[in-house]
Image 1 (cartoon, rainbow, N blue to C red):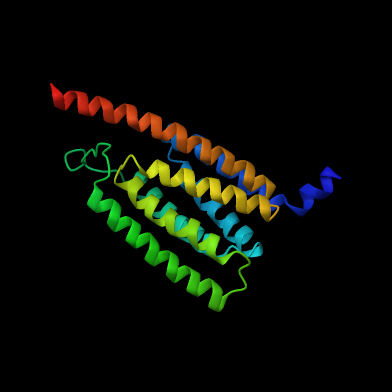
Image 2 (image 1 turned 180 degrees about the vertical axis):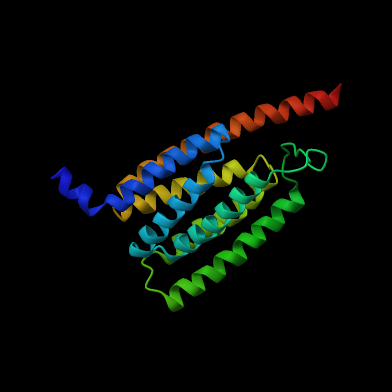
Length: 201
């Protein structure tokens, strides 16, 4: 019974295992996270295509390309004199409004594409998680603390969608993603408090 299920879902199981190892390597800042990210994204392009999560599939294509870019940058390295260390910061009210607007535009565009050109079964939720993921990824690159709130929402909603579609190994992966987003928020918050304390001296 279990063997039959594994045979039917081995690609998703491999994707889930790769995603968990990716999380570990990311925390350790190990360069092998990038080639593993390529593998993970490639697997999930197929998984999401078969599950008709087309916006999520497109997001995985984006992640796949970014993995190649990150891999190249880490191998090449940077000149320490040119490297700038970006500190964790809070989002400003103005930027928050802009990002909400951008998220809404991306969401509307994806809903239009998914409803008009695909047979997506959950176009509105698929578009919702994808639009927020695009914005959260940008916030992550800028080290904005509040990006973790966005990831908690994205991962929690995605978890519900994958459970609904019967993607149980992926659901386990997103339980970890949601938990790590909470852990990441508190770790970044500690760093931000240290920075603010230094500025007050």
